[in-house]
Image (cartoon, rainbow, N blue to C red; front, side, top):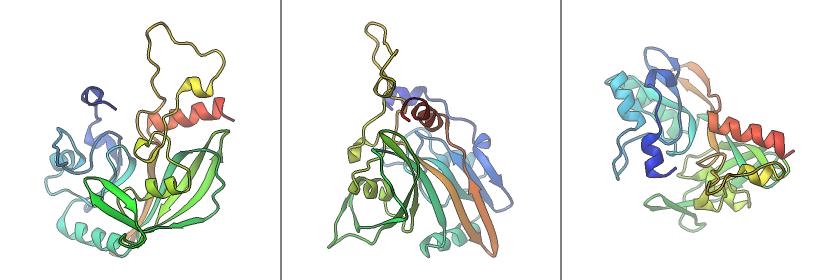
Length: 247
């Protein structure tokens, strides 16, 4: 999404994002095109600022990439933030993402265990010598002619982990240009009966990479939580078009 398009994108009210709330914790379905925290380059809106307007003591417990949608946890007090942070640090949080990837790939509990080196400025690379341990498990959910819907389970939580691990399998996420993923156009899959008017530029079905945090399970102070987030409109539309024209 371009900067101009981003300004035109209307974010829903924070209360409309909430999928669970109790005395200590808020779980939201984060929309795409909004950062989880304050970014170095600034920005008018992010989840942390919206959450603090809703609840002044709110703290975002973990991070999703700006273009990634789905389950995000927000603590309402310092103690809950501490407890959630411990669960993440000890890798006791079960995280499930869904991604649409390029090509038909049969992943059956495929474990990708490739160390990731964070080079700064949102640049990461696979580096067996200097990288930190990174492990992700992949399972194919649905096959199309030219694409696959995949379940991704990150065991660790490195920056861009799912994205770069998929790229190493020649299975880049749709629209993820940083890792050589390409956008999907309707004309690409609907070869017959698709026309554009003169001087009209075709837009991709999704204007971001197709990654969604679908489910999160966590135990906080003896209480088990399971949160699930519905697909946002753009992700659901992509799947609908693939089911209609690429099967």
